Image (cartoon, rainbow, N blue to C red; front, side, top):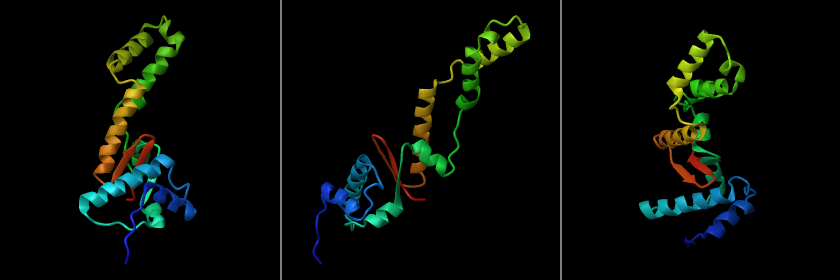
Length: 153
């Protein structure tokens, strides 16, 4: 049998030829190709290019958090609850201007307790990192600019 080296162009073309050009984004195919090359180099095992098997074994997601939630990862931390409530409460002028001391005290307590909670962007970055770790404990994760590819569970 004769071995053929597969270039990145050949790899991408093979997906199109098999009618699977849309199975991964362009960036996703690049990341998967690079990962497979590194795997071969690291293990010394030659891989056969089987587009159908790759489409069955790997899936691309916009984020690790999205992929992890699909497989049972639970979002951690107070942001979706109390911090979001604080943000909403702070925007309601009626409460801020309320003469009701009891209501004002409750709002002030909530704001004080959660004022150091991360903002939404920070929180989502933390959760994305936690999702990558969670996925890495269970499968292979390829993180690239624009998303992640995970090996099926």
